[in-house]
Figure 1 (cartoon, rainbow, N blue to C red):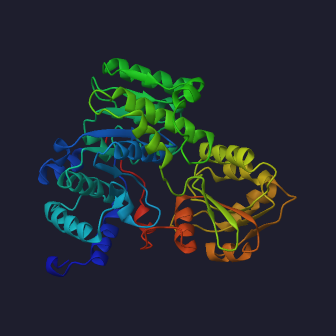
Figure 2: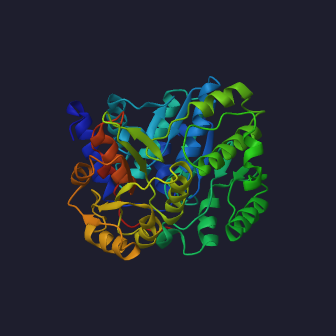
Figure 3: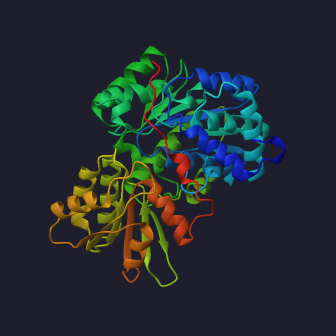
Length: 430
């Protein structure tokens, strides 16, 4: 790749080449690449967020609150919905294409061993960019797991674990206790940790690791949610789970008040204006059709979607457009969602790991024989087939939600770079 002629397209192509290394557990490569980049993580302050669901929403709330307080806030999340640039933001402005090009060029020269994965490379890109941008605080989301995730090379002001549920079990473990041990790997000695985990087996593991590391532990219990939110605006995000995420964010802000003071007004303003696309996001087309987009890609997410539909859209039976990755627990998800629909369209996800639309359709038919189910060749066909329906839910994979946002014109980003979310089975480096 000629450095003098490097374009954004060429930079993206280089990033595509890294994804074939898959996902790799272990911190050695990330630490080495960060050292070659000047150890930018040592110039920054972080809130490190792990968990099964709700990580992105909690990160968005924390970012919005601290930005409302006047801080320059970096936000690192994954996967992206449309453009790779979504992963690296400062004050909710996507990293410019020119900066992606420059960072790829500089870090590619440092990565002479060519052993960094896409996520490791992107992690160091983000660190370098945030340090250059002189961010006051970085909201830092884990990728997969926590203990051996590339993001775990930082020492944060606080560690946050949203919840523990079953997902990525082939890599993180087949029990909640094993998954919790991986997520709790972000806990650092003496650094406070906040969690809303309510699964007893998972919480016991988090408590044990926090004790071992002398890390103060704050547990946000379900019965405390409303009282913690008293005096603030509920976030404009649908679902009870978003109240849980907001309470978790508030608890985190509370324990950091001495280091980063935030007023009650800043908190209210931050929560009132938070934005996080693709998670119970309700949009409306010019013809009045309402579309709910939600990346319910695991069983816990599907249960949350079902609860939100029953609460916020009681008595309304939507058309469901569904696509999932083959390695997810889609049979269980289909059974949860099938009773809610008046009609169902299944589609493949634009991914090498997609579940077949026909398989999905058969599962929905078995779960609800009374509802018509049609397998279609792609998302545009499903959107067209349901164009006259008043209410549609597009759900399953975040890949599908990202494609829908772009095709429907509701995404601020363009680029069709969802393929960069692809990865192979992680290489375990214990």
